[in-house]
Length: 165
Image (cartoon, rainbow, N blue to C red; front, top):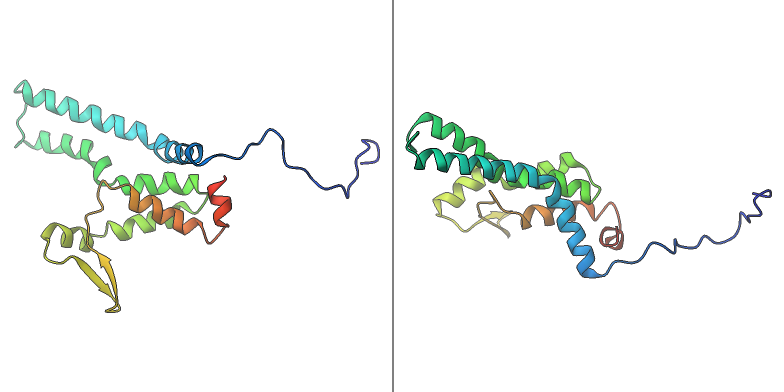
């Protein structure tokens, strides 16, 4: 420190090159940081869907064959389980545990929830007979899992750190 002429007790100044992000920049950074890693899987699934549609249009297969069902599983799996993909991606963006993020996705994608939503018989489960938990099919949804993972990351850090990362 002496050779460099630095004072060890001098206050540390913020990096002049690091600017504070406005809300739009922050929002776009979050969206691209979460969806960017998932885009190749979505694009691949879309290409498989296109191939499947082409094969049906050409009469090579029909939508009742096992081949069609297997190709549909390949193409639709990403979309049906999108909350799991987004959970991992959001956990990396918000710097929290990927395993706990996937656990959040598992809760909202649990078969009891999905089946109740598909049946349409109830609108909410009552937690402790007081708190309503809306019944909704969260397959292919994005907002609930992103907010769930973000909410998971907040207790570990301050809200300001999450926003300004």
